Image (cartoon, rainbow, N blue to C red; front, side, top):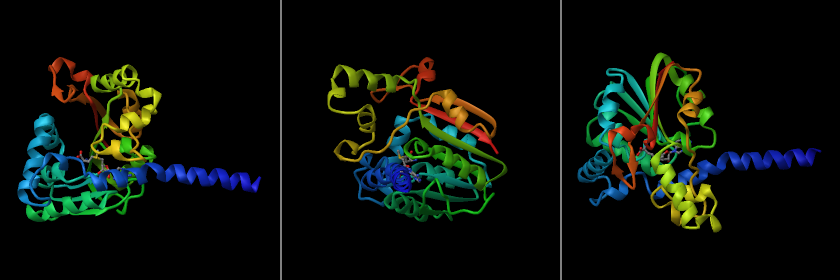
Length: 268
Ligand SMILES: C[S@@+](CC[C@H](N)C(=O)[O-])C[C@H]1O[C@@H](n2cnc3c(N)ncnc32)[C@H](O)[C@@H]1O
């Protein structure tokens, strides 16, 4: 009985760290967006190129972000990657903090803050166990991160803990009922990828560079309802979908309900 119990506990612990190990490797090698920059890493031109390509692909994002950032407040970004959105946030908020599992992303974000003369700190930390005191932020932002971690619900608990009463959040997750997910599912079937790969491994290939990895990052998809349920304990929870993209092209606004991102906002 004792042995069986430790075997199960051992495997649970392994499962718990699996996604985080894969995420660290994936985004240490390829912080999101750096493949769109040709200039030497860490230079102003490098950041400029990443910014240009990100907001050309997601033209709806800068305004949405600016309309959300609590001006004059203290804002945390979870999973900052190379710091493109963080730069927008840091230009509005009084003070910022950023965390990422991958040290290369945290370093790139820190460098960008320094180049732009902003007071924020970017550091390596796990969103499921954040190194911040209770009720220390007026806003929490996270784009494309919670669906890659083992326990998104723990991240949400941590968000609640570090947010002040009345603080707001904006979180973007991948959308299950999107044209992009449908395109991937069709590809998985008609290209017979199911013969050699699990859906999970196939889907992970949408992350740049992941196809070359043995242990691929975890990618979950959320329906609007599932995204809403994740934040059930918050107030004024609103869910919208954005980026009606198919093969990287922005389509008509009428297809927005089938966009690739579920954007959730709310208040503690
Ligand atoms: C797809 S990238 C998105 C980066 C950035 N938010 C963006 O939109 O460009 C996902 C990021 O989340 C980070 N990440 C994944 N799981 C995490 C966790 N448990 N704690 C902190 N960061 C995490 C990864 O290291 C990676 O930088």
